[in-house]
Image (cartoon, rainbow, N blue to C red; front, top):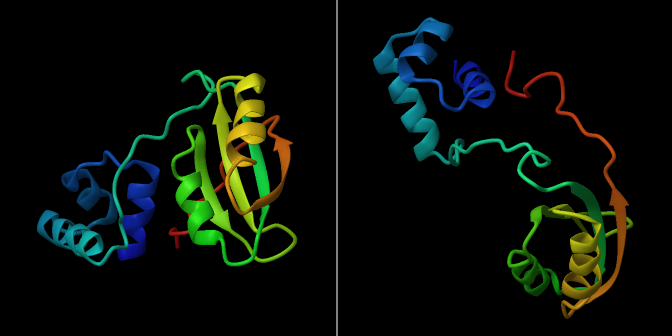
Length: 145
C-alpha cells in the first residue's frame, strides 16, 4: 500500500488525501495516517514543484564531473552547495569522484561556473563537462508495482 501511495504522490505531489484514498481504494483516515508515517519515517522528505528548465530561463544544461583530492569530499560538497545553478551533485565510485547537474541561463554562465567557481574550489583537481542536448524522465516510477 505504501508503494502505491508513493507512486501516486510521485506522479502528482499535489494530490489531495481524498483523491489519493480514492485512487488506491482505502479510507481517507488510512491514507492520511500512512502519508504522515511516511513523512515521519523520512521516506517522504518533502513536496516540491517540478520546474521545466528552459521555460524558466535555464537554457543550458550540463553534467560536470569532478576529480577531487582524497579526503576532501566534505569541504568540496559544502562549497558546491553554495554554487548557483548546481541542481544536484553526487559522490561517485569510479573514474570520477563527483557528478553535478548544472542548469544555467546560457553557455557563458556555464563556462564561468565551471572555470571560475568549481575549478576554484580547494580540493578540485579537474573537471569534465558534458552538454545535455535533450532529456526525458523514465517511463515509470520505481514505486509502482
